[in-house]
Length: 250
Ligand SMILES: NC(=O)c1ccc[n+]([C@@H]2O[C@H](COP(=O)([O-])OP(=O)(O)OC[C@H]3O[C@@H](n4cnc5c(N)ncnc54)[C@H](O)[C@@H]3O)[C@@H](O)[C@H]2O)c1
Image 1 (cartoon, rainbow, N blue to C red):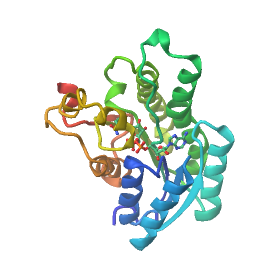
Image 2: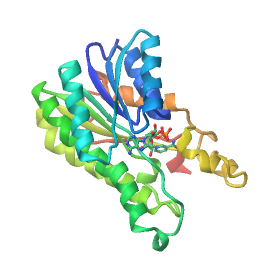
Image 3: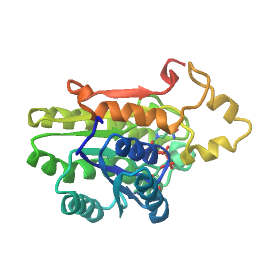
Image 4: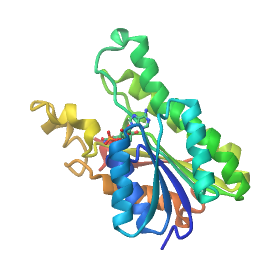
């Protein structure tokens, strides 16, 4: 088992990519702190981990909230005695309008959850990892961290920010044996793309706008995240791994 005796936090663990990764981590022997803003779906992930014989707890957290993110990491230390892996994954899409029509409230909501949340996760987790003389962090960016998409200004900005913040953290904490990478999914079959899926005109185009001509599954992101947090990626840090079916080539 590749994550035997490791302790991992997964934010957004009640949803598609977060849930698939929490289950993958548990399957490889990790004890998992599942965090999500929605208690019901987060608890459901914990149930699924326990059913497979794994060990997990749920902590309700809004990634945009400093106090709650601090409490999440404290709960992890209290329950499991430390932290080895952080998957900073929770995220939301934005209301799709042109930049000049984006309200300041909408900008703040999306950037706070997607980018400030990633900062807060690292801010509170890194001291715990330093205590253990190392750790591994994966931040969820997006194909849209690399390329612009119309009507996605707050999302584009937040996911681009995650890529450079990841490089910064990798640089500052490499000497402490903490590796920090980003995973950048293309179009993956989860709830976040429901508005696109329900658009009969756009979905046939969006879902095939990549070299493989299909959407990805959450498990295909989970596999990439598992690689990045595992010892197999021991010389990988500061990178942003596109898992997009060739979406950027398109
Ligand atoms: N699905 C895609 O096509 C795609 C593509 C690129 C990037 N991503 C990114 O992947 C990550 C996971 O998204 P997903 O596709 O699994 O979607 P999802 O909607 O299924 O999962 C997102 C999870 O985050 C949780 N969440 C939302 N706001 C939160 C908050 N403030 N605090 C804590 N948890 C919160 C939700 O409850 C949900 O469980 C996101 O960061 C998203 O931007 C997804």
